[in-house]
Image (tube, rainbow, N blue to C red; front, side, top):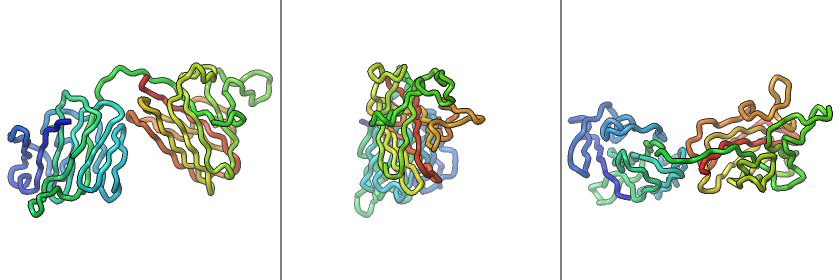
Length: 299
């Protein structure tokens, strides 16, 4: 990937509040007083005349010594150089700070990309090598792509622990309680420290032969805490997740059992083309049931 490179240094900002665009050696005014390379996505947006819908915020190297994930972007670093990939095409600027300076890499407002590599802070004149990474910020927007999203639910890999919503008669009145598909899974106990689930999308009537296997869920239950790890298969991504985990087979709303995802107690509804998600639920005890709903895109 060929990137334009913006250089921002403390002295130039103090003197003129300008940054240099090295690709053309022209200059652009930057509003703000973020000296020492600590510029923001808003300032970059004004400089390059390109709006960015999302910002990762400033990601400090000491908190992410090997890299991490922000929205659809996963990045890796050795402390000097950074590489990144995105699960979906993005228009992006990357601010790489080290020493008192920052480099801002920018592909172009009309360019949609999914990866970059060799990004670094400015060169240290004392040794001719990049300054060590201090922090990094990703400023990006999702490129418009034609994609379809589907409803998905997690299903335990052991059949005896799986119950389809359509087959539940919890009030034992002889009629089924729900008319939507999905699964509740359990019970699991603390002796089942690790349990695994497959995630199926568009599996109407709970028929997995009609659905698509889109990812996996791993639940670690120990000492009263459940940690839930969700990992998607490429090219599928998460738009939102809703989780129930508790002693009853299903969550309740106003004293009544429900399978409506919006009424589950734990939810992440602002995911951005994420290929993974995670929950940590403390204060649990006894046998547990698990329901995971997800809106999955990429079809």
